[in-house]
Length: 117
Image (cartoon, rainbow, N blue to C red; front, side, top):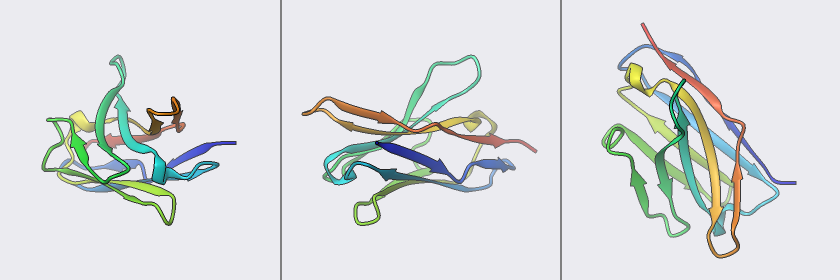
C-alpha cells in the first residue's frame, strides 16, 4: 500500500518560516517526480514546486525565491522549506509522487498551513 504522509504544517506569523516533510512508503521515490501542491479555500489546487528524479526543480512564480524543495531518496522523503511566508500562502499543502512512464500518481492527505498574525 502506497502512502504519502505530510507533516510540518501549522500556524505561523507573516514573515515566518515552516518546513514541510513528506514521508513515502510503498514506493521508492527515486523513480518518481515529487511535488508540492496547495489548495486554498474556494480555489483550485495549484502547483507549488516540483523536483524530478534528476533533481531538477520548478517553482510557481508566487513562491520563487522564498520556497525550496528538496528530496532525500535514501530516506524516501521530500521537503519544502518555506520562508518569508505571506497570508496568501495559507492553504492545505499536498505531497505528490508521479511517474509519467508508468502512469502512477499518488497524493498525500495534506497538511494545513495558516499564515496569520
